[in-house]
Image (cartoon, rainbow, N blue to C red):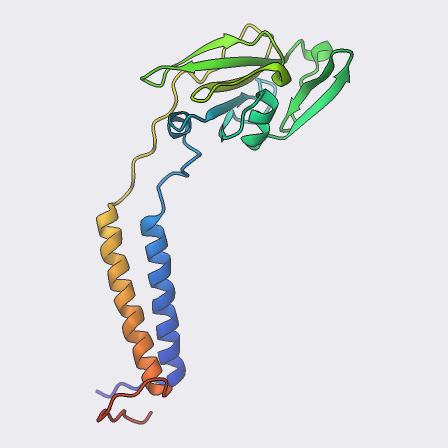
Length: 209
């Protein structure tokens, strides 16, 4: 049986092996969950978890995200990535919409209710209704800021912060795959370099293709 290779094929092998090696190492080292997208990790890092319920009339599902800046409630919402709308009043600006959801009191008798949530050791959350607006609040690290569209009688459905998802597969397995991929990259790159004349080995005669 005769096996032949072209220089293009060898170079392609080297590039493919190198790409596989780099992508495998990246996947092996990356965490299962975003380091700031998990509610428990967020509050454990003394940040603020921002939770939003859009109400029964909205098709949007409840959302949560971590705020690393939270000098007031508005800053916390914006730091967590929510888009806000405001209206001016004689008392200053007040928040009317979050991510495009702006309840109309005259039409639905609903509005944005605003809560501060104290997080216990078991990650259960105890809420207190804010007596000030978002621009007047002072969130504390390790707590939850919750917004709910409703009549003001509802309480946030997020009563316990979710656990961090379990990892699928072991980092040990990923490490071995990364090592094998790295060896493939080294071998493929070395062979390609020999045929392209980038490196030489005294006494080695390469077959002609």
